[in-house]
Image 1 (cartoon, rainbow, N blue to C red):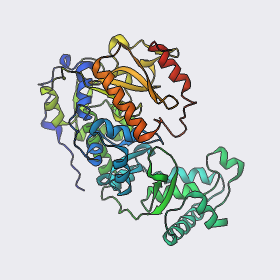
Image 2 (image 1 turned 180 degrees about the vertical axis):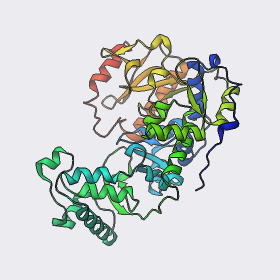
Image 3 (image 1 turned 45 degrees about the vertical axis):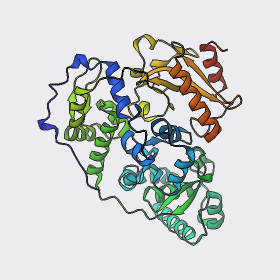
Image 4 (image 1 turned 120 degrees about the vertical axis):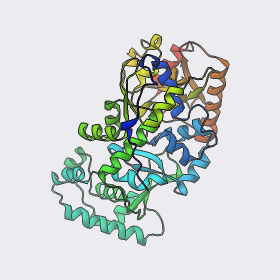
Length: 413
């Protein structure tokens, strides 16, 4: 893979007047950059994730909706792509797991390595590096000899006393045995990979199989530069703080990577934004669509999560709206999934599997386009997923209060 780093020194921003770059225009611009305007309608899973960015996976259904909303890709195709290793779930930026395309596997995986932190936790529990290194080799031997992928219980049974219990103190620190750390280190090094049980990304249960992914040819500095370039391309522009949150880089690393790849663009309010040079000219020519473009997305969709700026996605008149006595625009992360029109949040939704329906609250009432899209997503959830979980521990019972609140806000309580 060849690293491409833009050289912004000669790029000006004269064609972009700050007063023109209003929150409304920037919302529509991010919407376009995310491919939510129909420009990814015939894309593959890999192409969607390359254009819009890696899909955050926490045992929820976001990766499926990411691909369905942008390209109409159904769950069976996504699961085939996972099986064929066209896309895969890996720990990367900030050590968080994302679903990404195969072109990014090696260099993205290198961003998620944090062996020192893992060893620090175990060292306080009396485990040294040598013990974990030996356990890693034993795990690899067992997996190579196995007839197929093995789950953690099967591995514990096979490895016997090689897996050490760390007692009550270990449980308090999130490490009840030495096995999870060894598995995590092997995965971060590309020597094993996780295989989702039943092939589904929204059920956080895994088996493990040997892999042998070639190491990235990018060093740490080049990998950081590549991530910043990709990130700015996915978002269409971000502040220093937003880019630092997503990447997990230090302030110094973030400033260096941004200065090498991007230009600073003043906007009408907030900002300024760091943008790729090519996007500066594109934004100068960009106009927001006139007709409605409605999407239902997950609260962890890339549009929202990459910049963690949901407050910017509300119209000024909607920033004081509340659910369960919490002001939506003041929360770092949305408590419900958003309904959007050209990048503006116009309502919230949750899925109610007991009644096989989408509970929703539209701030200004429905339009035909909104009603149609809600029905389409509702049918897709019924046919492809059965439920729409936000994260691994989400359940109908845990979201009942929010379902009731949305119904009440929407006048259906």
